Image 1 (tube, rainbow, N blue to C red):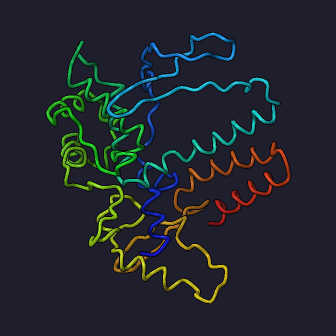
Image 2: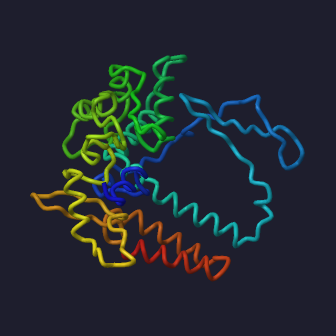
Image 3: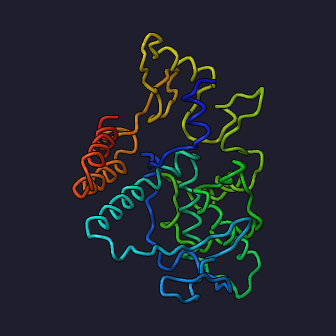
Length: 307
């Protein structure tokens, strides 16, 4: 396996929004997406008090921690702006990561969030508590595959309960495809969520398997590992002492028997998200702390603009 393929499979993606998934739209949530749970655990804060709650939440095999940032308020304004602009640049690419990890991740997230803002659970409804845990796991992992094991995790609530929750959501809040009914959508998404044999591994590096076709990540569509390796081998100049790392910012697809490379850049794949990233990086460039930092940001901007 070539190095590019290994990098793409192992990293599981940078962060971007596909044109197909952009049509589903991101819904504005009407209530907080998580509830903070009180914890007896605390730590000494910057004022010498020990009332800071550092454990935010626990669910499944996860623990979410909170951190203090002593001294942040004392930073110069430009340093605060730099941190904020870089944060916004990263946030602008959030959906890219979801899409790159798995082609149905954005559809799943939008569905779960529509349920969360629409369904009114009965007090103490046990299956709804399981739904909340599943939704938080999906948020944490940016998809339905475990962030460490790469294995798909399956909901512990039933398919029947899932249908019940979706039925409480207005159709215009669901990521329905053109002409699709709610029932058709539910029948489409249930196997994606509940079938453990469907796309079971985000990255499958087992021996004697095709690492491309047996991995669920969304870097390739319709190709085999052999086709991917041959495609990039043909582009490489073996005499180049400083070879280019081909394919680090693109997706390979096969259309009508022809292999095509869709480059992630302004004017290319994920253009809408990348334009926002570039906007915030340029803001960050304006408050760079030194010439080296400014040059690094300029090079990153050029990379996103040209591919």
